[in-house]
Length: 283
Image 1 (cartoon, rainbow, N blue to C red):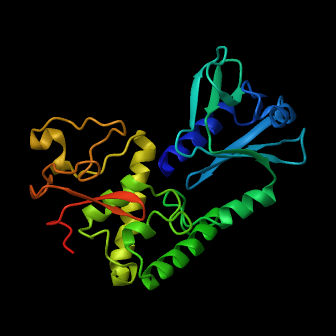
Image 2 (cartoon, rainbow, N blue to C red):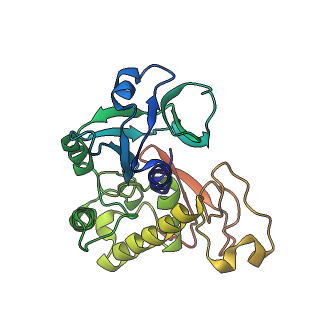
């Protein structure tokens, strides 16, 4: 499942390519045909992301009643920008101009909603590391309140921190890779209860999520190793994995830790694989 940085990149791509102009909207597959027909030819106002949820806003002077396409890609969904050409595969939703088509395939969720439903969806989510905290915007103020709530709930919880970070109601957009890598970088065992972490440790977790996910959004890949542990610095071959990027322990079970050389361990936590270095992340 894509992590939050992917959804933010998609939101920026949609806004950059289409915002402020009428667009062609269709559903070649047919499962979103009625909703697409209602949007076809209207102005795409912009797109926003909160965690793993994408909200595409339609409406302008020609449409006083704003409408929003709410998308969650789920496990197999994709949204790709391609040169305009006849659609191929099962395209649930196509947004296009004269040159480019954004084709949505296999999403977990693709529905047409109103602003009230968008607010209700966001209300269920935790703070997003890729959105501002505080400041003069409504999103920043909302994110600030959500962050304070998430940190307080984490410090009261007896659940493992590795599971809490995956709870989208607590930390929106954080997936297995960022959860795994941030805890390694800070030397925290993912099985430690949330209430066993200090306020300073939780602040450090959040700050590292902000930095790493912002880097991922900019580059379009997840890199979590520090400069001294890159392939070039260590004289090792680059990592080969579908997810790309250089990581410390994620999907490196049995391989030597890049910091201490101890074999990386893999276990299960809340139904998901969890990776750790027993030396760098002592129990």
